[in-house]
Length: 313
Ligand SMILES: Nc1nc2c(ncn2[C@@H]2O[C@H](COP(=O)(O)OP(=O)(O)O)[C@@H](O)[C@H]2O)c(=O)[nH]1
Ligand SMILES: [Mg+2]
Image (cartoon, rainbow, N blue to C red; front, side, top):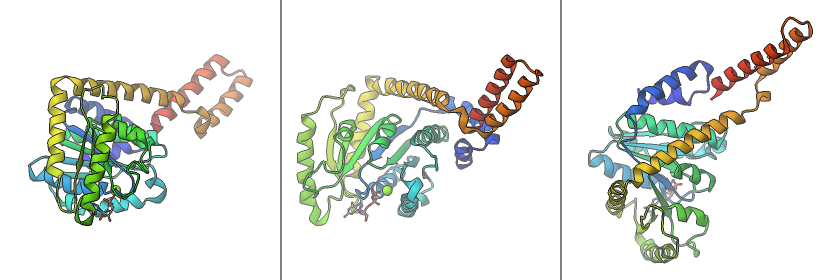
């Protein structure tokens, strides 16, 4: 049922739009009860492996976990979606887990709208933890940050410059950083990276929420550090629920989503719809033969355009 609802909401077919709107309105009173966690990091840092191990830790404790992925580049390569699917095979077998790759939208804006709606659907379906995986390219981070409660950045040691490949702005967005692959001969380097990052974070402006970002190490392969990361996330949830920040942040996010979507609807160019062009030609003829007033023709053309926008978004 959940997978079907997501498919309807992601659909670009005109005949699905009304149903999608009805489904979302029906479920929205039942949303908001999950903890939404964004996970980012450079390709290869170990996000999918981490989510699989971490997700299994969560399902083992009886929690229902949904995993969604945002990866704008995957629309070109398709590679990471297939990769994620195979890599999260074990988690996918868990009855308490639900895994959904990102839809094939044309724009990041479209992808994030769908992801936000999918979050709501998962919440209404009773998922308590929703994990959103994104690739550390900058643009998608900002989108994911705007739809989650907790933002976890995964980094890898051994690059010499620990911040290499990740923009400083992403580090500033993180509520926690986990240095991955802290196992085998990598363990010492991971510990050193943890210390370096902790120092770097101390120099940062404090977060508006009052939360102090933590730096940890983990090994998804050995299952180490996962319980500690969960403990930090639970502490965050407890602390920011008490102060009311979590709820206020959600409200700010939803209002921004509303405004953003409205701007998006206003930005859709009439010229991109063939049906608008056709109606324009037809109405022009009617105006010229004086069968319709120019004013009425303009209103009718606007109606055609509005219908086309509705069918698309
Ligand atoms: N040693 C070690 N390797 C890991 C760990 N987690 C992931 N890897 C490896 O790192 C590579 C990239 O992992 P993947 O999860 O696909 O990274 P993603 O691109 O960030 O999703 C794979 O070859 C994994 O086997 C870990 O905890 N320890
Ligand atoms: Mg991945």
